[in-house]
Image (cartoon, rainbow, N blue to C red):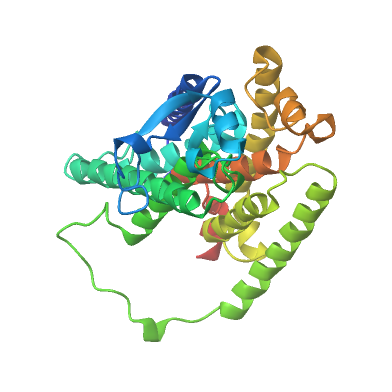
Amino acid sequence: MPMKISNAILLLVVCVICATFNMQFFKGLDDMMGEQYWVVDTTRGDNGWYAMGLLPHLKNMNKDVVKALNTDDDPDNNLAIYSQNGDFAGNTFYGISLGFALIMYLIWFAFIIGFPDRVDPYLLPRRIFTIAVIVCCSVIVNLFLMRITADFAHDPMSRIANISGHHASILFHAAGIWFALLFSALGTHTHSFGEVLAPDSRKWQTQANEKFNWLFTLLGLITGLELLLFKNRLALPDTAVDYALWIIWVVIFMRMYGFSPKYWIKRPTGIAIMVLGTLFTLPVFYMLERLTGDLGAGFASPLLAQMFGPENRNVGLSMMISIYLVFWMEFAAAIRMNGPLRKTVSQSH
């Protein structure tokens, strides 16, 4: 049964508010940095940075002072830079970062808690606990990645928090989405006393050939699309990250709408929400950047032009499209509009 339009709007509004507040938190971390570096404070002991600890003692130091120490002839006074302004992606790539946060909150609220129309008072405490565990797992994983990056960083001027070209907010949200999908797939938030027996796998009929044929067909199409976007400067320089998001879209799309066109044509409403929602989102962020000047839209962007040169002002477009395709696809599922048309179902009986 599809969700009422009022509940669908409420879910979308709550996710947007939470994601915006979340991104402003990361913007605040960037603002705290200013023109300083956060560097590892070795005067306060080993603090486990190269042993068991994940988060070291940090101190603020002027960038020019750090650069002078790290580029002189004495390697003993080099400082390990933990982060600088821009590593937490508050306004940088705002549309992209916000898209990750939107997906994360949509999964938490709609699929784990059941908000706004399927909140189970009996299961709510354990579902909230599940979200808390997801947050902790995401934070620990990101700190662990930063620790690894620090241990393998040989350039004294390297930024530890900016891992493999990512930003901390994108990493946090991506990890949150990954763990949320994992916990949801495992059913850890829906366990009850009325467990049922698992189905007998010996009675399953395999459709593996058809699934794999269409999976690799879609992967081939998005590979060609990614190459086309990259050659026309419409994808971020870190192509592997950009391509990974398109792969995620393929996997979720096949899980959501079936694994061949004969299933896709029966679900036009969900696919229309995915496509039209994405087409609606892009001009919204375009206008937002025109009005604010600093909330990155991912395309026709002064921020991207400033960072990568005017010829690269559209390099965020590919990631913007893939992220919002995933978001609106998940939103269609959250409001239960991704299933086959009723007319199609009735004809099949």
